[in-house]
Image (cartoon, rainbow, N blue to C red; front, side):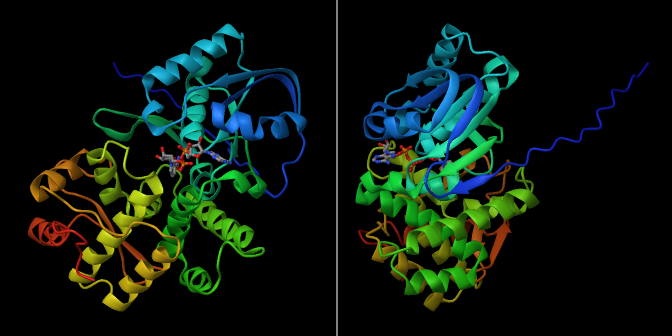
Length: 354
Ligand code: NAD
């Protein structure tokens, strides 16, 4: 006998993304704020000043990508139980992408899922990580391999939090902005070439354009069945670098910058992009002091590490390669020999073809 279960769902997961000074957040229930000691020290009072709720609890976890793991999730969930949060409670993720990814994941698990709000405080999380509902943690097999799609109820992007951000972290955020432009928006790329993000209102313009781009992509392909994978441009290579360097040498956005340079070289060798355009991307990244090269010690090992990336199927590696600036191809048909040839150009100091 076969029984059917019919689940015709109409779920509206739409949410606002506020860009500008942090507005009043009112909530008629318990709120837990997830943050780390550094962000709490710098900005928690600002958030508390704008929050009206029945009860507010602060949950802090240590700072760093190395804490984006199961132990931290258990710790967060335990604190949520200690504070007797219930299904109607709210979690606010207040920090960079690490806090955002973990806050989102913990709220997707607690009582089988409660609401959460993203208040991103790094440039990278303001332009990318806080929007789109991808949440998760790393494990010994790689980055973001465990997680859930869980959309926030709202995102509050206040660029004034960035006033305390170290310049390297700023650059890492720029890398993700450049990623959005190269993959989807040639006009935006040209605008970035001509406008310094450290001057005047340029930063808020760039944040808005990057978030608009990401929002449109998520609307079209929330669960990454196709188009959304394009936002992993630079990440296939970048994740291997992050893993090889144990998350210690480079910031995530810096690995993405190197990864974009590598992807561009593969795109050039594959006849998808011309070398002038690859050079323009490199020049733009260089303006923000991003690292652009990486010495691959063992090409075969680097190549094999691609297979741990969740974007790759059993036998084929998925690459996101620009078809010129503003357009992108998602392909799993690049010959291994071509990939290894490009990787081997990075096996010398200051490697790469261009
Ligand atoms: P992060 O969260 O580690 O923050 C970087 C550093 O800046 C930390 O030391 C943090 O404490 C500090 N910081 C945060 N706000 C600050 C402020 N206002 N002033 C001074 N210091 C501040 O790193 P990140 O670059 O924000 O995020 C990287 C993470 O985001 C990675 O784990 C990556 O996988 C994830 N990510 C997720 C998505 C997604 O769609 N979910 C997208 C991109 C990246």
